[in-house]
Each structure stands twice: as structure tokens, then as C-alpha cells.
Length: 299
Image 1 (tube, rainbow, N blue to C red):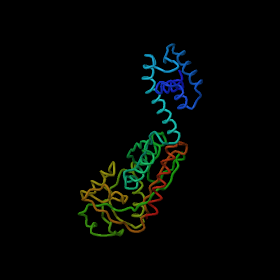
Image 2: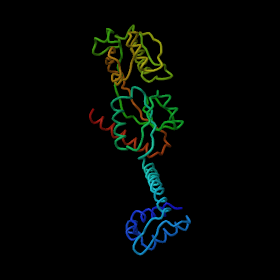
Image 3: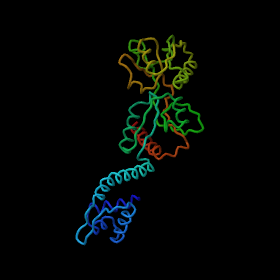
Image 4: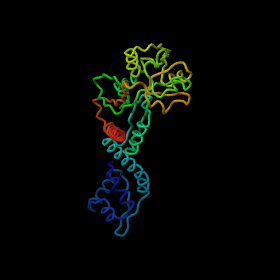
């Protein structure tokens, strides 16, 4: 049984007139009659009672009509989904992001993409850069918002944002009274950080500058995530370098102060597999670039 035959039958059953049904379907009336007759022969039942004046459904015709309508609706939905998938308008995109990239810009990107592609579901996972790289390589993620350095031949990289590195401290810390810090202000401080296997980007460049400026500090215990690290900082245990966007999710008993001007900005990279030809990914990348461009123009 072909869906085409069911569509012809439903049109005749709803119109109860071959001429009107043929006009609706944009085919010739004799061809329509032949197709409906072929369906009856295939099923071995009479679907329509025909006279010169009326067309009436048989009991078999009523039953087939009730069954055919949802079947045709499902078939149409399947067709729309297939066409939408080809255009990147339906499906799911799996997105990874580091915690400090969960800022207003990322929210704008996700909202813009959802509005322009309502048929695509963004599946978001907060993961450190290393875990995102693994997810991208294993095709568990489509795209990631990561921190450099990332040297993976299979991945494409694009810088989509920069922000200041600042120093986080307890609001009771004497350094919180200063507007901008000098390297000498960090002498004698305990510096806390997330374990290098999880997050290393902030800390390597920060520690390199400390060594360059001969800052004498002590290392505190490692944390397993940024939230834990900031909680330790809030207790007054020590200080930590972090992206400025951390202000957006930090507690009230934390303070953030600008570091000396020679501290380089923290970059956010967009990463995806070079061989990922998904049209959904292509649409998402266009959205990210559009939003990033707007933010750059505002800046």
C-alpha cells in the first residue's frame, strides 16, 4: 500500500466528490478514480459506494479513513523532520562549556540560537576543557567553549571572546581595600587553584608572571572545581586568579580586584571537530559569530 494511494482516498472520502477531490489534488479525475480503484483491489474491499449522484463511504471505507488520517499526519511529520534535519532545523546539538564561560555572552548565544532554530534542542554540559576535548574527539560533544591551549589536530579552533584576569579574595582581605594591585601586594599570599589536571590555563600564565616579578607566595591545596576553589577563597584561606566573569556567580563575601596591567587577557575558544559536517553545527557557529561580533562592536 502506497501513501500516495491513501492520500487520494482520504481526499475523496473528505470531499465525497471525485471532481472536487481531483481539483484538490491537482490531478485528472479519471486518474484519481483509477488510483482509488487500485487501492480497493489491493485491499480486497470496497471503500466507496458510487452512483452518478453520490459518493458514500462503506464501513470499510470509514475504518480506513479513521486509520489513514493519523498515518498520513505522521508521514508528513517524518518528511518535515527529515527536511528540517538536512537544513539543521531539527535535532539536538551537544554543547560543552567551562564554568567561567557561563556568562552573559553564552546566555545570549544560546537564547539567540533557540529563537532562530526552535526545532533544535541545545544539550548543555558544564565540563573542564580536558573533558570537553575528550568529548569532542569521541563525538559525544558537537562543540565546546574551552580555554587554551588546545593542540588537537582533529579540532578546529576559533577565538570568540576575551576577558580580564582578576584576583579573587575574601572581602575581609586587606587587598580588597585596593582598587588595583601591584605584584608586590601578592608577596606572602597563599594562592589557591583548581588541580592542574582539571584547569591549568589561568594559573600557568599567572605563576609565570609571579616568577618574572619575583613574587614570593605559597601554594595552597588544590580544589576539584572552581566553585570549591572560590569557597576556600571566601573563607580567607588565600587568593586565586580567575576570569572576570566569575563575578557573575560569586558569593557576596568575595571581592575581585584588577591585577597589574601586564596580565594577558583570558581567551575563550570555540572548538569543534574538523570533520563534523552537521548542518546544525554550521547554524550554531553562525549564531556564535554573529553574537560575538555584536559584543565586539559594543566593546
